[in-house]
Length: 338
Image (tube, rainbow, N blue to C red):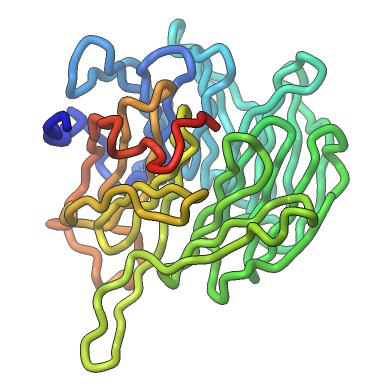
C-alpha cells in the first residue's frame, strides 16, 4: 500500500464559505464559487498549492459553477439572479442567464453538437440557454424552488424544496420525464448523477444518502444508507447534513462530505465504505474530483446548518486538495470502470 500524502491547502483561497467546486475537463484548473461574491480559477499544474489564474466578480454570493466542454470557459450562477461566463485565457466575461430570483444551480450539456447551459433558480424554474442568444431557449416550471441539480449525458435531475426530484431526458428537454419525492424523509441538500447516467445519488440534512435508478425496471437496486452521524450517546444520535456528493471519474465510486467535518469514499455497487477520513475541523461544503481522479478538492467553511449564531470569524475557511490513492477509491469487488 502506498503511504498517504497529507492534504494541501489551496493558496489565497476565498474570504467566505465555498458554495461549489469544479475542475476543468482539460487541465488541473479548479473553479471555486464562494459566498464572497467571486468565482476564482486556480491553476494547479505548476504549484501543489495552486496559483490564481482568473476571477470574476458578481453582485452577490456565487452559488454554483461549471466548466464548458473546452475547459477554457467557465460559468457561475449567483444570488444576484444572473449567470456569467468567464474565458480564462482572455479574461473576457459576459452575462449568459437571468432569473427572477437567485440562481442556485448551473450545468452545461450538448444538444446536436451545440453546447448549452441549464440554470435552476429559487423562482421555481429551470431555463435553457444557447450561449449565442440573450433570451432563454426554453423555460420549464418546477414543483418548487431548485436546491440542487446535476447533468450527466442525457440525464438532468433537479432537486427542489419539499423533497421533490424531477428527472428530464435532455433529448426532450422541456418535458419532465418523471417526478418523485425523495426516499429520504428530510430536506434534500445535494443531488449527483451516476457516471453512466442510469441514476442519481441524493443527500439530505439528516445524515442519510439515497440511490435512485431512473428506469422502473431497476427500482430493486434503489437503496438508502445512514452516514455523517455520531455514535449514539444515551439513546441520542447527532446527525449532520450531507452537503456534497462527487463521483470518481474513473471508478464510479463516490465521496460524501458533511457538516460533521468528515469525508468518506464509498462503493455504491457493493454497498460498502472504502475509506473514512479524519475530521477536518469544520463543515465540508463542496467537493470535486479532477478529470483523472487523482485530486479530490473539498471546501471547509460554515454551512449555516446551526443558524447564524454559530458563525464566527474564527471558523475554519479553506479549500483543501487531497491526493487520491488508488486503493482509496478503487472498488473492492471489481476493477470494472463505470
